[in-house]
Length: 205
Image (cartoon, rainbow, N blue to C red; front, side, top):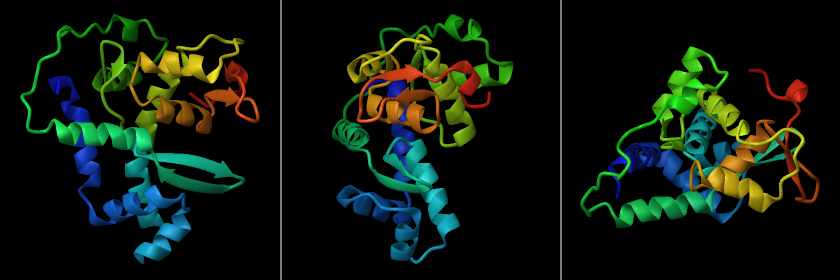
């Protein structure tokens, strides 16, 4: 395991170090559920369950599906595969990556505020996402950066979208889904082409 993966390993382990969240992971592996359903099963208030969902989602462990005003959550199998890989290597020596030098020139070239650039510097290494922020405000900054990787007015297939996102993080499904759910990317009905949301319709910056 690489030392640069340590923050992501810690984030996943910290997120799962809670009995309620562990139960939710088990249940959401079976089928998708709403916050209300999970609150009833856990005998907790919906705000408390929403907090747990936010932690799991920020760690990339959940996928979200919108149906009208309802939010349905289910476990992200790709992220679970990554977690299992971490556990399988937990007793092996840690290795330093070949590219120890962290080039941040690409961050400075972005038309972002100084505070947003600090967030990007904290969560990336040489243009790759090291871990998922657990706060939505920071996650939105990451998503806004990811949106800059796509060309305006160009149509992308899902495979092309995945190719772009794979340069940033292995969990392309989670990144692609959140780019859509938070309004940075649009997708044709029926799972067709993807395209960058027009600037005048994009989420507030």
